[in-house]
Structures are given as structure tokens and as C-alpha cells.
Image (cartoon, rainbow over all chains, first blue to last red; front, side, top):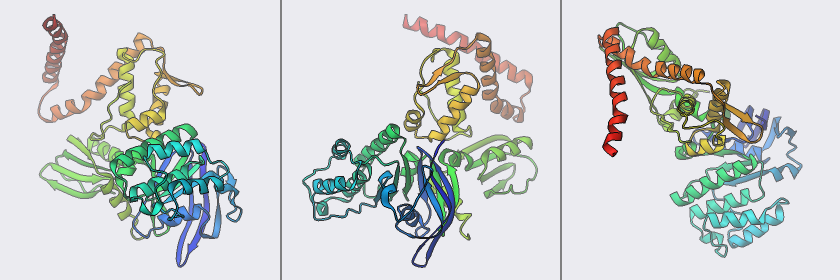
Length: 291
Length: 136
């Protein structure tokens, strides 16, 4: 796989908050969710990648080209939407689209029209009177209609009803299939992660503390139960270890290995159940709380 | 090509795809030359990562069950009967491992288990005919 984004020991500052140093790569064509507690640096990471934060060290590449934050041409390849923020509140949807079309050399009017109709927006409506979900939809259209190579999104599905969310899921799939676009999206909503993500990064205290494929994450975190005679001391990396008679139950962060270990010890009636993404994110971040 | 991804069990998702697709190839419901859905399409349909589907398709290609044609996607490969039988045996062993181990720990022995397998085979060989008679 090619690499859309490559961070080399990137350090950025926003006031007293330090982001990084970050060394990380995003393969081209993937949807990556950024998860982490409030204040961990999710928004700062996205802003840094738009060149909005002061760079204190390191650098980053987009599709192999070193970025110079002071020269704006590279931003043509990026789209961004931040939690329904629209610059021109008092103007209509159509006027906002027109203004963006003027700013973006590669603006695709036909695509913008299509997206407006997929999201059922009324182009004559004034932005200030839009609902939360409609604002999110408009900010996504403004981020997408120049067909960026990399889309940066911050909490853009907040306030979307299920219809808008469905339209959004379909649009993002279509655009990613059409152009191999890559997406980096900060979110607290595990439904987004479940529906859209190929991979996740966990951010804690300004650092990327883990980078995993979504399905690998779901497969490796399991609640395992079995019947096993004799005593067994707690396996490393497990949680909520419970033993009663020959029944054993625990939460594993590496299910395949632990199941193999139990099989080797002669365990029977092994069952494993998946954890919710919420639980998995909680346990994963718990491990990095003191970073 | 329809597959059913089950995230409740312990079988890795990519292996579920490998097992189900290869079963469909062995039984002939996916005939030789049939195109497979694109990686992104299958990922979206099953709400799984493109990384997982890619891994599954790579494994199916490694087992010579599917072939990739540059920029056209993946297609069902040509399989001989022997390799189909080998694959079916491997599937059978995989599926039986857990119930057999559980049964041994519940006190059954080889003869008991063989007897039960015979009963299951007997029932399976009868049932399709019985169904045909009903519909006649």
C-alpha cells in the first residue's frame, strides 16, 4: 500500500499544549478514526495536519511530498470539516458553495450539486437557520467537492439523524471507491468507528499511543470462558480474572494466544465473546493513562 | 457471493471469509471464473475493514482458490477434484475440533463419537431425498 500521510517526529504547540513528537504513517485509501479522551489532542492533531499549529520540530509528508506549512498549494489536496463550523453564517447554502468554488481550483460543481441533493439541503436556506445535522452535511460538502486526496474530519457526525448519517456513509464509501481518498476522523461515536473505520489510532496526552486495525482490535479483545481443572495463575495482560471451581472467565487482550494456552493446558468448553468497541477503547486507553 | 460474518465467535474475521468463500468454491456455488466482489465493496457490505478483506483474499489466492487479474479484481480459480477433497477434509477437521474435544472432556470415547458421526451422516444422506419426496 502507498502512504498518504507520513509524520516524522512532528512536534506542534498550541498554547501550553504540546502535540507530539509524532511518528506515524497512514496507508492510502483507508478510513482511520482518531479516538481518545477529551483534551488528548485529537483536534490538535487534525489542526496540525492543516498547518494551523506552530511547528516546533519534525515534519510531515503528504503522498511523499514534504509539507511546507507556509506555502499553501498542498492544501488543495486536503479537505477538512470541523464539527459543523461554517464561515459565512449569514449567507445561504448556495452562497457558501459559490465562495468555496472560488477558493478551490479543483472544485467540482457537479459533485457539489449531487452532494447537496444526497443530503437533501435547500440551497436557498441561510446557514444560521440550519439544524446541527444540516450544518454538518454542508461542512462535509465544502470539504469534499474539490475531491481531496486526504479528508480531515473532527466530530462531523454529531447531531446527524439516522437518515443524514446513512447518506453520509454512502457518500464517503462512493468517494473513497472512486478516488482512493484517505480519511482521518476524530470521533467519540463508536457507531462511526464500527461502520466506517478500517483502522484506529489512540491519542493520549498529545501522543499517538496505539495504531491498530479495527478488526484486529475486535478480534484480539475477548471475554473468554472455559472449564479447566487445577490452578492457573493469572495470564499476563488479562483483566477481570474470575475462577470458581473448574470454571474460569477473564477478559483477554490477545485472545488467540490465550485460547491456545488454555487448549495446551487441556481446557474444555472454551467460549469467547467479543467486547463492545466502547469497552475495548476504555481498556486500551486505561493502559496508557499514565503516559 | 453472499457471506455471513459473525463477530461473536473466536474465529478471526478474515478466516471466516476464507472458510465461507472456499466452501462456496468447493461446492460449486461459486463457479470457476466467477468474479468476487471488490475488496471495498465486501468490506462495506459486512462492516469490516478493507484490511481484513484484503488479508482474506490474499490467503485465498495463496491457497490457489482465487486469482487476481491486474486492475480487474479477483476471480474463482480452476480447481481439480483432489484439491477440493483435501480442502473439504481440512474444513471438516477444523469444524469438528471443538465439539470433539468438549465431548472427550464430558467422558465420551472414540467409539461413542464415531457412532454419533455415523448417525449424523445417516440422517444427512436421508434428509435431501425425504425433502424431494415431500415436494413431489
